[in-house]
Image (cartoon, rainbow, N blue to C red):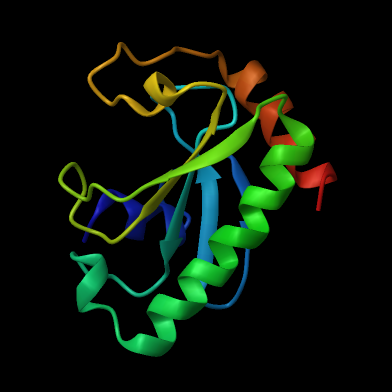
Length: 129
């Protein structure tokens, strides 16, 4: 069971910004920017391109909805999209508020926010839906 499956099951807390029957979006706890969100299918599949077509397209549409809320809530030029999938063996999409290309550079040092700051960011994004 992956850490993401434990979040889905409620065994590990997360700052959830959106949820449907099939998908979950929550703040990354080691973000590249304020408002960095992970979007996952609730079905545990390691590689995004191993998802069945319905789940894959649903995940993309759900990510688009979440990205729209992030863009309204967090000052940025665009919301960048990245699929890396090496750190957790559960398909996921990174949605990262960005103002320049380097904002999506995963070799940059990650930011650290307090639980209170993460909660405030979560509330801003949720309010933007």
